[in-house]
Image (cartoon, rainbow, N blue to C red; front, side):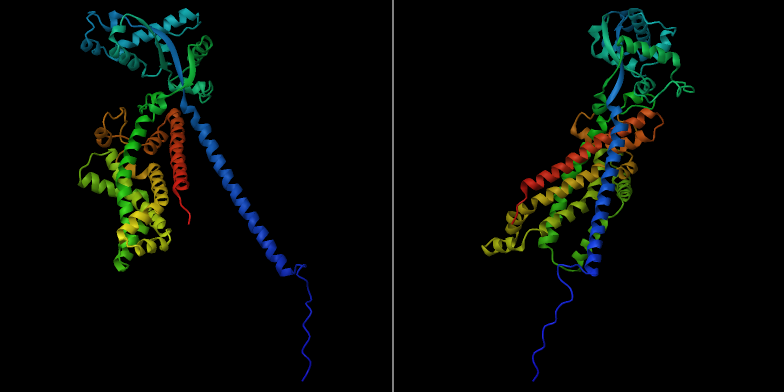
Length: 446
């Protein structure tokens, strides 16, 4: 027998890093550095995006106005003096144009403005909606005929662009809509305080305008169209999606039929949104003959697009509930339905709400399906008066309205497109923030 072999003395110490360990540590350090660089690039792109949107879109929330006193001559507006509303309505906007020209002449005389422009040329610095605005006021207030009233008229898009730095004296060399003499007149109006740039609430609550009146365009009616579409999506997608998820996850037998259904749901979640627009055009408009461009049709199309997202997120929330919850409920005598609706569903509610709100936010920002069902084929000029009118009357939506503005020629519409993006982002951020708050508020840990 030989003596037991002596233990081998290691050639290295744990406190001394060998070459392999050094290479591994170096690789980990490089990976951390790459991750930090990726995060930095992402944050930089996000800041660049937000800065671009804010710099280009904030101008849409301000507008240039001209303040003048207009004498509502009875000889022009109500020759009989009877204050008969039907006769007053017969006076077209052409009948109000001389009143605006006279108001400019009085403004020049009152403030001592030195200009060689004729009143007709001076009036061209106003929006083409000025005469219509004056007419609407007189029809609403016929008792004011004969009085001198102070009005605040929109300046045209070129004057507004001049106030915002978008239009310069060099850029108007070939512009038929504004002249250097008119800009000189604008400068004098600024000096006397008759022309100012102020906050424009009509951009938020107003309606779209024609190509000839970009300064009067607003996104308010399109916001109402989006609201009614989201109501349709919420009313249909939430109950259908949750009910389908509960059945598939808790009650459906595991066989090849349910496997096919699950695969198709996952595939539908990846289908491009424009495909749902084609489906909506073929089924809801061409086959069912629902009104084209109506928020109801838009809501139905977005419901089809949102359902897979809600079903997938709801099933994930149901799976996250521990099986012990179900077993405990069944163990004390609860039925399968009682265990699901009294115990599992309340615990899964935060995840369900989060998935639903994220699905709605995704639907709110979709444009392609709305283009195919005609929600950009007209100018939505009036707010809906009733819920039925809001659902069935032709309207637009925020993303479709932004797309429509972006393709128009006037730079003022391009500015409004960026402003619409700001409002849309506010809605999307608010909805995602609400999803996070609801999840934290109702989430239970076990």
